[in-house]
Amino acid sequence: MTIALALNGKIGGDFALRIEFDAPSQGVTALLGPSGSGKTSVLRALAGLARIPGRIVVDGEIWQDGKTFLAPELRRTGYVFQGAGLLPHLSVAANLDYAERRAPQGPFARDAIIENTGIAHLLDRLPSRLSGGEAQRASIARALLSQPRLLLMDEPLSALDSGARGNLLDWLEALLVDIAIPVFYVTHDHAEAARLAARTIRISDGRLSD
Image (cartoon, rainbow, N blue to C red):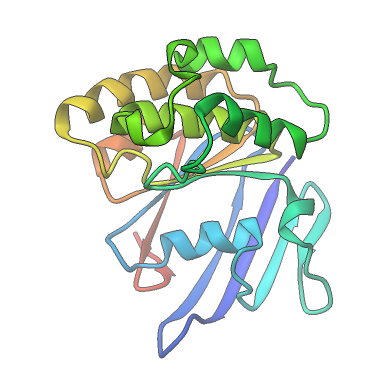
């Protein structure tokens, strides 16, 4: 699988996104840049959550161009938000159930994902009873159980304190090595990008930068 993206359009007001790149079929691609540079907009375009003029082709399938716009549910992207984004009225187990019910069959098995994310002891808890790091682990588990073709991670560590961030970074580094799908990882932290990603795409003011 290869991912080809070319976006050229305004996102509200006068901010314009003009970005073009190809990404490999496996491994982590970091989107690195300051806040407000357009990194999250690229993720939202990939997920189909934002309709920005341009073209997106995944493994030869057109997700978006001048005539086509594939609905988000047909793109099968797993999205990990900065604030976890778990359904607050459902337990961790029920959040996982929700993802599984909506997913096709795929390579990510529930028991293995629960073990690898270390959330077995959290399954009966509501999100309000989770720490920041626990909530992000549960969010990543839910995203993987949706059997995604792409995993999109929007600054998943930025809301954590330094201790929780360091612990989760160690765990995330090991987890991402074993995920055989493309991962797009948004961050403003250069060290984080260097540690997790095989490739880094730098973005500034809506454009690629050196």
